[in-house]
Length: 290
Image (cartoon, rainbow, N blue to C red; front, top):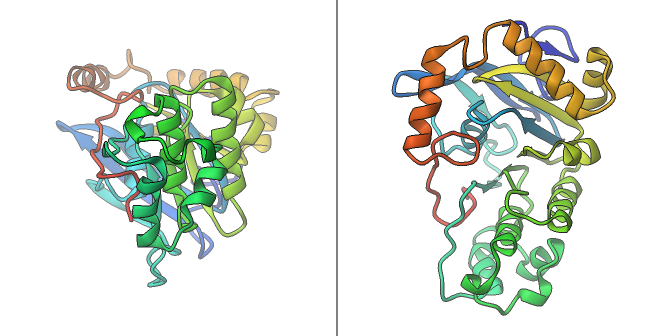
């Protein structure tokens, strides 16, 4: 496959795997299979501080990659290095999976207060950050699906973890809530914090992303600084970049028709109850992997 990025060598979202800066989260030659079929195939990336958005068609491996970053999906081969999490500082990973099973019978504030005690976080500040202050005393089962999604984002960011992984945070949200979710993610993505988000909404990528990773059938089709990638492909929008990188991936034989095994794997995932990405769900108690 022909892989393109804004830097020479390994495609990445921050710096190359070889010689990556100490604060980079490094994915090194990661392969993950289900039923013997690769969902991620020799993926190498490095994620630096700021907001990186992972895009790609259903079944491309987005949820599997984000689960691997969060530590809930073990690689078959390869490794992931998270220096700011593994340095003994006690800091953790904030993780929002695609489906969030909050426990009924507790209010939004009580739900966050439980997790806040574990990570020295402020539940009221977290609720305010996603616009849920007025819903603080409502039972979680009475919140709309979109509000529960925002509650999950707030919980993932409790305690200011140095790595935040949000799988489809805008899924099921109305336009205003989608914008709020991405503004919250972007605000958290400081010089010391790495935030990795997946989405199908390319307008949100245009508005908020620092860097982008595009997956195509489990491989990296494009990765790097968003503006640099647009320049490289000669396009003005992420939608045009998505189409151009997708054409490259198809020509290099990574589309469904070019790989019957992968096409069959996607169909098997669908039968087994996939998430929106076509990847297998990972059950996580609560939201964050703390």
